[in-house]
Image (cartoon, rainbow, N blue to C red; front, side, top):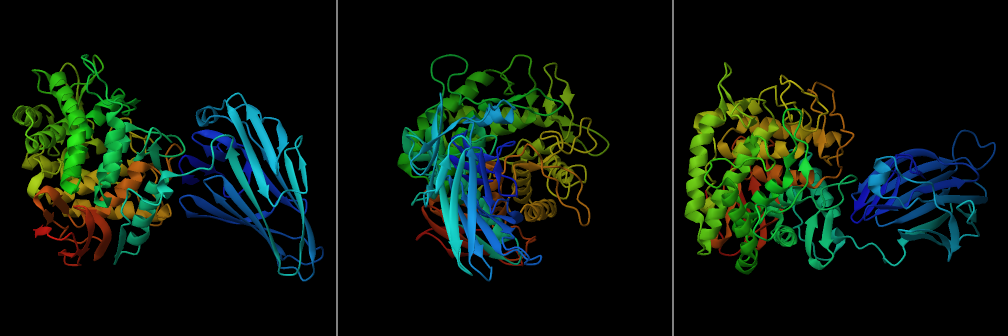
Length: 638
């Protein structure tokens, strides 16, 4: 996969685009070219290597034996360099001892089908081609696309979808063809992540662990590849959820990823918040103030959840924390009204009750939703107070009531020391299934002065949850399973029933480290880094939750987005957690609470962004943090 949204290219490691499955070049979710098959001297090159050289490009190498009676050695290398923007360069390298005349054919075709139709098996037949300029063109009711070639082909056969050349190569000579896919009337692809000014700081990591440099590099690179612009407001960028399945905005995922990447600056957060503020529901109905979002499968024990609820609660949380990281006063004030509407929706929906219930009648009261709501209330209250707005005291009072009730109503006592319930049924019955979603109880949110907000669990319950997250039931050795291995319905490939979701593992690592449970945090962190190495340091959205053993590797999940916004952003959170960064830009301070056990040895993080300026920090093998670069006047607190 080569990604630089809205451009995307998918192929097998053979390099040929055959039109089967999802193969092809895509633009904005439409397959603009499904087939691009190269033949040299009448046969397909033998594929010998495929490698993604960056998030947006890949290199394929094949060989051809063009000289008769030359033994087993190939004498022509065929190199294909493919870019997500719809360009491909095909280069022939001759190693023959005599001149070669090489006929080259490229067979092209497309169905101009939508990605959703292709995934569902509803793609239609290939469209007829016509000769167009120096290539071919296809048209349908939905639009037109063309492929142009440089140099122009010797022959172009529309009926066969074929372009032909004949090259004369001297010994050691080369020849190249560049193909460019274009959507009529659309102009060239201009990926938001390839703009001259990026919303993400160019962070780098070095240290004792050999994988941290590539891990952070590919995480940031994947984030760039998933950046999109709001067409009506091109200054506002946000992240697509992931490819190939979710190439557009998913509000909860976009907010979550923007929050985890705050160490790279606040511009992505601001663009995401502004984009979603324009979608906020208005009026006076029960949904007024919500950020709309689709329903999402919640596993075998719970009905689908509402991602709109999650997004609405994440909105004020992200704004409050972005302010702490350095979002300007003007930008914060501009975004304060939609954040107030989110908080008003929360209070109106809860009304005189204690819990934020499922928005669908007869739905459960979810543990994870209470964690999001509690954090939004406390951080939202802090935000309202900072700007002299009303409502902060009321939110804090409700949060206190929620904490008191939750610690009794959601705790399931058992012989193992107890556990938080996944949810409460409408009749009050606790649903005791243990899964990774419980990690959100440790994600309490950042307040001023480097302090974290209080959590829904008390000290004893927090300690028990830390023990559970570090137990073999949840810790697969590659990260936290979505559902414990002893729970009914456990499936290592179930994306909410046992698979490792990188986002939730990162939340668990950060929460455990902040609560002082460094052994459990370090184990999970090392497991994720081991999984990342198996995936070429580029983590997918999720992978199977099978138990790690000597010599094993994590099994890819067939439905995972790769790259994924939340998985790439999790890479940033996982490594910056080691430094324990807690900025308070309005107060001009930054607090460092590093992981004292230094689970990866020494690590140096440079090119971060705190308080509107570059920030670099070193954590030694003894777990001591030292600031090496910071904004003028930024005071260090420990």
